[in-house]
Length: 417
Image 1 (cartoon, helix red, strand yellow):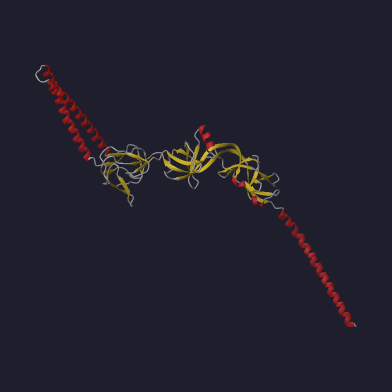
Image 2 (image 1 turned 45 degrees about the vertical axis):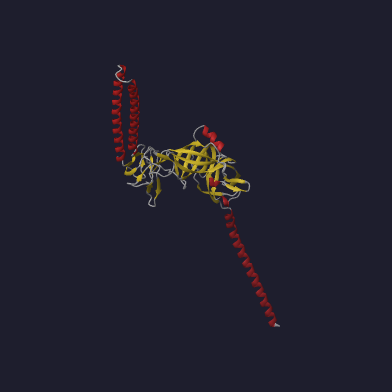
């Protein structure tokens, strides 16, 4: 009986201990939850860091972008007019040459000899003409005196006429010989930059010769042509002694979609539109003016070919080069602009986050007129002077407080062109 009572009191003590222990644990949990709850509330109320900018008004050009090809206004392939070996090359390939500057000299000795011969023949025949004219005067006097037959005097008239024709023929031969001698001196017909030589010193050249490009880059001339005046320079690409390309000024040809062609044509009527040429890396190379609009639309691709003229004083544009073209069609005056990254796209269209005076953001739907040069032009929905979020939009919703970490740089000012 005594042992049973001891066992029961022991169970009671264990039960009481468990109850006390549970109470202590509950108090500890309550204290811990009381401490963490305020910190979680602070975390939920923390502001989201963002960058911001102010919507500003400025003049923004409306630019159409395309790809163009640089072309020389004039490019000629220098061709010889007479046969002979090249005895002088009086320029360096790749250098700038002036119109009229001598480039090559063909051996002039045969043509000097031909000129001397023609002049000698002319002197001989002029003397014969004078003799015939004296005989004619003498015969006519004697015929009037009936000292000789009238037929002899009449025949002498025709001899004088024949000698005059011979002298005129000799004079033409002299002029031809002088011209051929002049053609031995090959001069540049235009100012520009000389290209790679297609011949070498001592090569035999002549009119209508074919210049085969050798593996070393030089040319070997073959074939013979008549000694007569020929074309000094053949326009366009092709074979020749050397190519000369005009560098200043220079053209850039580029296609334009017919969808914007009418606007370009109308604005061009008020004055030449500005055209900007950029490298493939986006560096501005040169500014020029639109000068040529083709007279028909390419039915294959629905484009119109345009040409712009550039001064190219720094020779940043090179013939045959592909460049990026920006054609300034018009200018939007006093337009609302924001950095391009400010505008987000959603199910309902474009929108921006506007920061209120209490540092809370509100999503505002906007209509974007155009994007260019890292600038978005807002057509409607956003007033000038509004502060907008430029970075950090993906963590935002309506009513969220934000903290501006650093102000974004305003859109780069674009001058009216």
